[in-house]
Length: 593
Image (tube, rainbow, N blue to C red; front, side):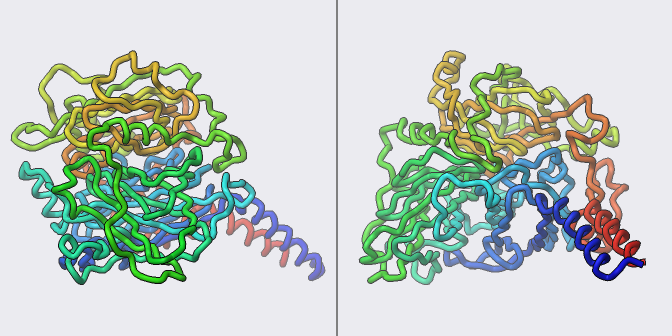
């Protein structure tokens, strides 16, 4: 038998080996329970969707390259899916959390354990429900991915981190909003804007009733804070500003930006921004934090304004007086567009890896495919109000697309989505894009609707190379930014205008393209890209279907009744890690014997 000292040495060696193997990619586990609670953010008691009993939900904070395991339990009275806005899941659209890729988590206490790696990502993202208009009732929270310590950030380390979640809000339930849309009605003007789940500070006794709880953010004078802002609302673009303070923009949706100061920034539905804010005022009083509606009739929409309080620790009094002014651009349509295009990528900064973000010279790559996606105001199709891309209103497949592929379910969807608007009546169909793996595509979003829209792509970031008003033509390519365009997953498309994006299709799977405006999304303004590597026969470019996959539609008979949480069936959320631990323990036992 080996001496005790030699045994300890060998055990330590094995432990060190295990640590070296897994230290770079550790696992982190979260549990999210979705349920209803009663809250009164605008002074009216209503049912909201809480996560772990909180509204908004908890912040999920991880480090880049972590393997993330999230066990989601559904205690709502309807099906649920959770999606991870902006997280580029590599090789695993199985975890995306939208109906085209996942069967929903059934009601009645069922759960599903998501597992994915935040591979080479940093930045500010959020999670939210993706079905049944549930996001209009809550269920959202911030998802933060931080740098590893060995990778420098392009600014001095801030003194603190602040998360601000903004969004328009209705006192009607998400089920009522859904029924209104089903009945052919528009949602109408929201009842207000929330900041971190709370209503406005009573800056105006006429517009804001008494008794509404507001958000207060406490800061210390002279310190600089990293302020992460997410717009998780239904459909309203919000102008964000902090009275008398500059917003130094440093990151958006996973990419560092060229650093420049703004007095206010338009944050569209589904977008996330990170600012550095220095507390450099004299604290004669508190300061307003404002999120006000944009691109609407301000006279009518005055109530659709969120107001919080920035409170210095040495503040001498409460905030008072009028709110800081929003952009005065009613007669200047170029202001918002110019601000959007001023957001550029910081090409000299490292991202999640130690290489400049601008090292990918997207402007020199030949485009292999072109799609023009045109949206128009909702129309009646077969007696129902529907929203469209290129005249097609998407109908979710009965069986999620990759499951249908895997089990040879025929007729579930069509690979015939048109590359441009067709001269034919609009229709409801399950038509998706047959995209080319490793292709480099140009997508032009033509918004002929009457409202500003947000466009989102799952599984990817795209380069926002151009924006303009009017109908897009090929001549507009001459205005594209081919050097330092920001890369992001959600972009705005102004009414009567267009936005052009470029994207490299290097992530195999089935990925959702959608309007992030909840009403347009619910009415069918979405499709999917099916990206398959025909040469992959060993799951190198796409992960296999997970062991805990839910089954529905034509495969519903394959689903077994849940008896225990899937999180308890895999140690630390990973069967590979479980078996590795067994090997290490086996080696230790053999040494002892």
